[in-house]
Image (cartoon, rainbow, N blue to C red; front, side):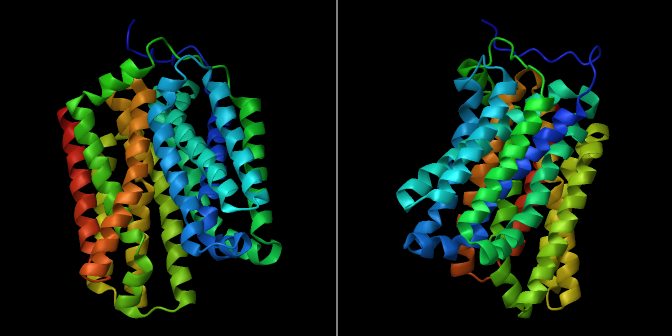
Length: 392
């Protein structure tokens, strides 16, 4: 049996940008649900009568589930209609949010968050392949921008919105709202996504073939470096900013808003750049991300320099998800589901790796040491990806 997945025909069918938008809406709902505990953690801990550390495992199990699902979903469901898969994953998010909202204890809440992780990882892994069936191959970068915009919007909105609504409605009602957002996405997908059947050979054998590619493995190392560098710094951005300037809560909220707005701008630019000049995006976005981190480290004593650094950092990182997913799709288009899943898995693992390395640096060196270290890793990863793209 062949290990190749046939590319969708690109010339004889209409593009479905409504379907692409429904995927972006799904990503928004999923990432919103993923981020909600960050703004509600003390309230969740109080409500379940557990420590904040115990409640924080709601984040850990979600990340674990996402990494596992992203890697294995194409192998576990090699012949399923991808329309049904995407709708089913979104339904998992609806169920997860509603179970969390009603959870009487942590033993119920954690499995529900694991379900959300499965939904996030599987949806992300499949979204690139599904998008490739919905648009012309020359527009794939733009389609991934639409999908990634859901992440940017969730990043900007979920934490402050969750914090505010948590004080007004309570944390359980906020998760009901998250379930409602996922339900809207599910309805949109049911209305717009066509039937998409994978070609034979999309199981474990295809996954193994991808993992034996030297170019793919080197590229995954580059992606790991870029994402680890970012999360090495961003996880501990508050203590770093405090050490540099002593910025108050209001000003720091403004800094995060600048970061989020610039992140969204980078996301919007990444798609057209990925379609027209993929190598440029692989070089520029990690470089700008690193420049922002270094600027914060060297000139972070004033509010304006911190805001400028946050804008550069946010813009650089905003373009990276679309850029690396597009790199994966173009590196092995015959196995787009498998390589997309592996990329998402590496990105999920990099969140934990970056946080762990950053924690060691903050505790063992200084609160600001995360900035040059993260910048170096991100730039090195970007250069590796650029070199690989040039030599393919």
